[in-house]
Image (cartoon, rainbow, N blue to C red; front, side, top):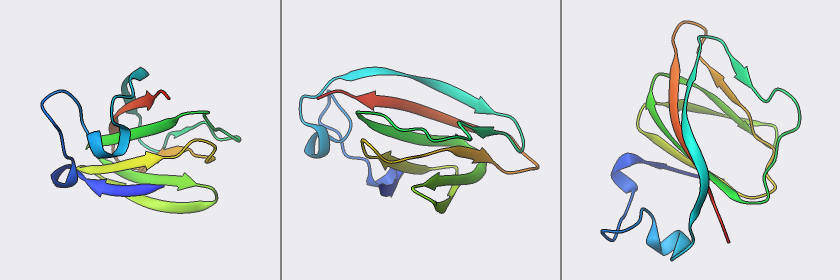
Length: 104
């Protein structure tokens, strides 16, 4: 797991985080709106690829391998391949995340 903010994101005109991912391609992604108090993937949930979350609205918690990390607008998390992770929005507001998986 790696935590950053939007201000930490580096880009080369073609890609975000080129020092982290080089020429690796995004394989899938999207935008998810989590309703107040919603937990996504409450059971064991991992990927074979790194997943990047960019939180664009709201706040909540991102449990990764049993550790709960507070999240808020502007946070960026890299969940590394094989890490069990979930997303839970605050009970009183929606949480919006842009997410994508980075191929090998």
